[in-house]
View 1 (cartoon, rainbow, N blue to C red):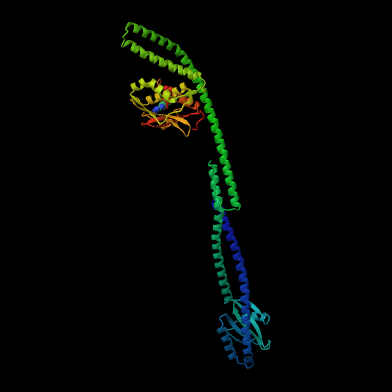
View 2: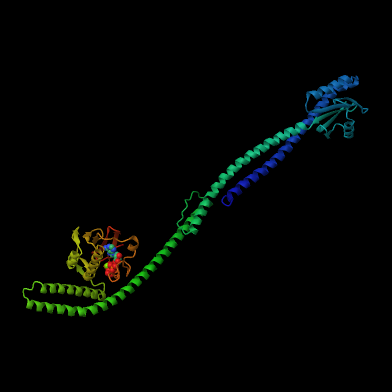
Length: 487
Ligand SMILES: Nc1ncnc2c1ncn2[C@@H]1O[C@H](COP(=O)(O)OP(=O)(O)OP(=O)(O)O)[C@@H](O)[C@H]1O
Ligand SMILES: [Mg+2]
């Protein structure tokens, strides 16, 4: 009912209007027709009476009552509308009549009461009858009465009424169809507006309705479309503002964490630096001592040499940590990334061999020099390579692809492994501080966030693609001219 409210109202209006007009027209037509028919019937009655009088005068004068009776009988027989006919003499006696049995005296009394040459409506057993009286020879010989049945008029009026009602009904049906169509035409855009308004109330602000007319509905639709568009724009602005704020918060949070990590690593590095120096010194002394004792020294000094190298590496890492925590990020110099990659791989060579990892290098094209903090970027490569190794506990392949992308004026370095891969859920979190899937003591969850921080500081991007059980690929893009890359 609610859905079709307006349409039903329009139909009801049409119906009501047509019905009212139908009733009025019927009443008017009935009135007109009955007046016209009545006049026609009265004239007919008068004419019949006059014609009886014309012939009857002579018959009365010659006192031929049989012929007079024949005359009235003939008139009645000829016309179905004639209910009766009778002639009354001057003495008040009925001269001839068409009644089968006895003449109803009551009728005479009623008719006598009325004026001559007049019309009286009688309510009889035979129905409504109009008695029309015409004097014979100016009343000298009496009066002729003709009773014309109203039945014919009633039938005519009924059939006319029936036709009018049928026409009114047909017009009403046509009106209902028209009203339905008009209602649909009007309510369709309104229904569209209602649906769109409901969608907006449910949060979907982007509602545009096509404007099909230039009338009031079209204007309303255009206004609605404008409102919906502006709501959508406002919402986008609010979301953008929210995002900006949350990004700002996340950045602040990250910076805070970075400074804590920086302080922490600086302390640890500082603490480790001194004992490492001592150990290295001791190792060198021990080496010299052993060399003196066994100059050919196949085993002893060789092992000590390895010890020395490893300690030196520890020192380098500690130094890197110290550098990372102390150096401001913007200390950069022109650097050759290919060289840096080679150096890094060289440092890790033994580790790869030990963990049955085969490393392949794919050089797509020569890398131009970029402005970079070499120590920081080396840490990125070390972290990524360590992660790749950790993902392949039973060995596997690491492929490092490097190349220059002219369109972006950037270099791209991709480190691909054939390791365990990363699940979809973990992928969303691997760059979070302290997120690790490694056993306690094996991973701190700082590797990737630090990598991201360093790459971002170089204006670059770091992306990852990974599929569980198939492996992962970390793609680093660094701008050549130091301008920040999109993404
Ligand atoms: N190449 C990779 N293959 C599979 N998983 C990886 C890979 N690289 C990183 N991950 C996942 O991302 C997590 C976070 O890595 P991230 O380097 O930040 O920390 P970590 O390696 O766990 O610890 P840390 O590097 O501090 O020693 C890892 O624990 C691991 O689950
Ligand atoms: Mg790591």
